[in-house]
Length: 572
Ligand code: 6R9
Image (tube, rainbow, N blue to C red):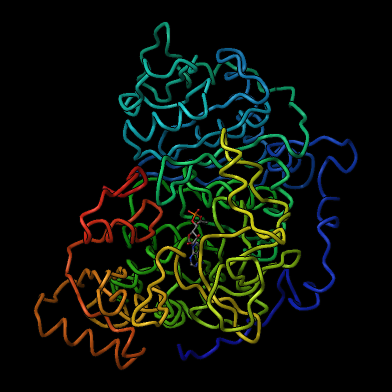
């Protein structure tokens, strides 16, 4: 892919010189920031909130919250008190102790954040569930984790099969019109009455913190367990990658049901004492631009699917808002199409910084930094303190430009601790040479930039050529008629596989065979003949996860009439 690099951003950044830092950095320097340095013990919620109350950030706004009519803000001092209260409620009425699993199943609200922090202060392991989960998804997760306590709303309670969950002992209901009964405790009422002071449970850095369930291509979702030690990397990447500084107003659009919404929607920003914006409700371009204008958002972390939707909404909408506060934009979750990067330059005059990581990795690993030039389409380079490589199936490192397994040398601070109840699954992530194998395929260029190609199981072999679906999808969305594209390999007796594209058209375009041919030619000319899709299907919508990933395995299952597997993370 031929792309023009975007030059570094001039000015002061938390990471000044990538190469120099990379060559000398040691995580021990970061560990000195936290309480274990003096006491041997630690607690994430203390480091994220309470610590700031002892210093000049006491009355700084920690949380700006908005969802429809509900609009609130809380200082670090208030967050400390309210999370203490939540901790007391969980302890008194839920009997929560260190190591217990406390699950949270509710829409984004301040109570959600008080509860996460309160549970962590008790040493409990938090399990956040996305509000759109239906009964089956909720059951799988609560059963596997043997959750003892659930905090939810009366509305969502309908999707909790209580009688099938023998380990679940206490259910708290959040909201003003809650009916308290024997089994259900009125959270808001108890919160109002609870004491503001709480004895924090000081834990070891490898004690459990959070359990994120993530689905693979087969089998049930697996519980990825993270520990308090993740703070080391979440703090440091919030500095280097998010480039957070004292005056920033930061907005991460991800829901805490996904790892981005906790690592960078809770921990990263608050560990660094940053004002954090949380917006509830559904996506619309007007609402989103409106938030940036209203709060003067300076640093914005979102996802390619959202950027593509904003891009699709047109540049006229942008002109109705004052977005001049923005200074730094980042993306995660999916490959960031070069087209989106160019759009960002055009409409914001800012670079969109791609970041690569996974639920299992707990924090960012391969990123673009303000101090480094960006090659649109590349995920960037590993953060200092982390070694990344492309390896073959035996764990041997491959030279530049060879496509292979994207692997990380084991032992970065935020690495998952285990897979809940499934040590074997955990072991299966690793390869000889202490490599963690991501399941993504990529290559590295001669300057050490990494280029994503697809999930290993998504990579297409057509007539002996290896094609990354992302590259084709990126080219497809450059065509003016294409809103979104998903590309799969379809088995073919002659070519091994052929490339098949599923395309959702932009408003105003009609499906036709001429248009299919035009799109085919567009890829052929812009990318390569062998990369042009031989088959194209138009669809109104593509199957996507709630976090915006195009679900290629679902496209493939549809195409081949196979079972679609676990769909609990799919959008309606
Ligand atoms: C944080 C998060 C992980 C998978 C990962 C990869 C894809 C994430 C990406 C990216 C290309 C990027 N992914 N970031 N692909 N470029 N910058 O998203 O975690 O939900 O576990 O997904 O997402 O395939 O393996 P998770």
